[in-house]
Image 1: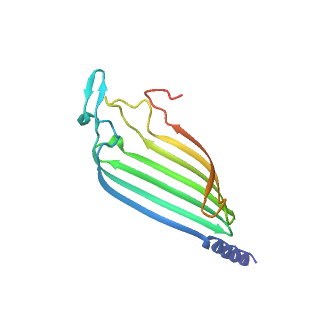
Image 2: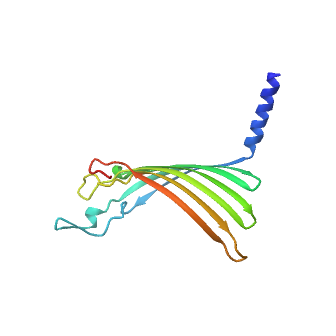
Image 3: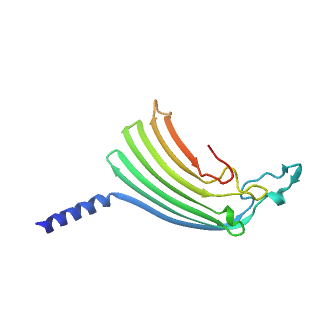
Length: 183
């Protein structure tokens, strides 16, 4: 009897997982980035004019990312999960390298022919450091944790129109720096 229950449970597990569509992608690219931090052409620092030769940071880079998407559909609803870590390594500017991790959950419900309700949530971690023009640590770091939640109602009032009502909440928490207190 226990064996039969295990077989039925296993078959139900396979049947339920067969309905989940997945997509897995690995990407890599190599290139050269000019002016990594998008610095201005010139900058006046204590009455000393610094030009782009001192301000611009340029480097060869290697970028790699993984994207995973799992989606489950049933009737007029769908639920999807995404996972996307990404890293960029600058060869001559090691302090400019960074890593991001993004995960998210999305729920979609087609209420009727003309109305769709969507709920999205995401969590993103960005681990990036930088330095001031003089080489000291930035007072406001570039790395952060970002949580967001959005809900929207898409509807059509008449044939050639699509209207959206959307509410978004986001919270970005910057990492503390040794240079300054961010509170």
